[in-house]
Amino acid sequence: MPIISAQGLSKTYRVHQKKSGLWNALRSLVHRRYKEIRAVDNVSFEIEAGEIVAFLGPNGAGKTTTLKMLSGLIYPSSGTARMLDFVPWERHDAFRRQFSLIMGQKNQLWWDLPASDSFQLHREIYSIPLDQFQTTLGELTDLFGVKELTRQPVRELSLGERMKMELIAALLHQPRVLLLDEPTIGLDVIAQVAIQKCLREYNAQRGVTMLLTSHYMRDVEALCSRVMVINHGRLIYNGQLSGIVEQFGREKIMRVQFATEQVPMEIDSFGTITQRLGPVAELKVERQRVPDVLNQLVNRFQIADVSVQDPPLEKMIAQVFEGGTATEAEATAEARTAT
Image (cartoon, rainbow, N blue to C red; front, side, top):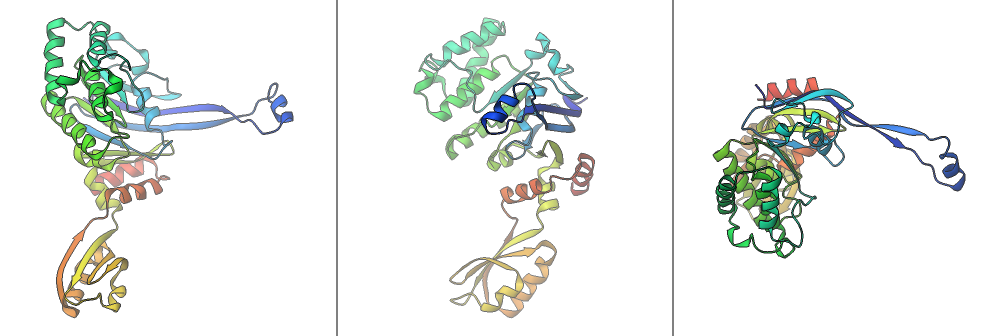
């Protein structure tokens, strides 16, 4: 049975449309005009226990709204959802003790106090037995490598250290589901890699289910084998990460190093030149033409080295966003075909 499921989940907001000018401002006091914005539109999916699933989409696509509905912070306009066998917006205490929501742009720790004081507050909020609390805290501080920093005021910590403390606070009550909204936002590459490593190890040790939103494709590649893509409130892809490459990676990047000092001029006929530097050229070639192009290059020119690779994941995800008019049913069918 899925640990998270949503069927036809939708959220619509009524937004007051205010026109400029004094007369329009006065008129709006008695006659307001509203516009309906569908933040999430008929989204359905299932997530099994222990999965780490990426939830991707451009700004304003509906990712955070979906997470807030799953965590019970807001009510949906229509549709149903269950998480941990509870309806989230009924907000049962037993439900709230089994998940955590971490938002990279929101802080749950007291700024001027040491993180250890905030941890003690969380112990009281969740009524965690002292021996369990001490054992869990010791395991988490070892995993995240911050045991010596828990007595330091949060404001004195680096951004990466602060996010580790936020994760520890969220995991103290041993949740079964972790909802992560941009957990590595603003972090440098080293801090991002450290957070990814800790999350991956924690998932392996505890089997906690994670739903991750991120604009950093490194997070997705490091943690997730499955992705869901949302755009304009609609789910447009739901399948394996490798399926995105097969479905939307219509071209390959071919890097050719010639044995001559310069790239031959006629190389333009083999594909779209993206880079030309000395004897090295990079071409975009349609996936199905790669074997034929390779054969022609080897037969016509003296080649010192050649490599073929997929375009960066960021570019392929952008192509998925551009396909945002697909219906959920179409996207799911395409995902199954690709995988």
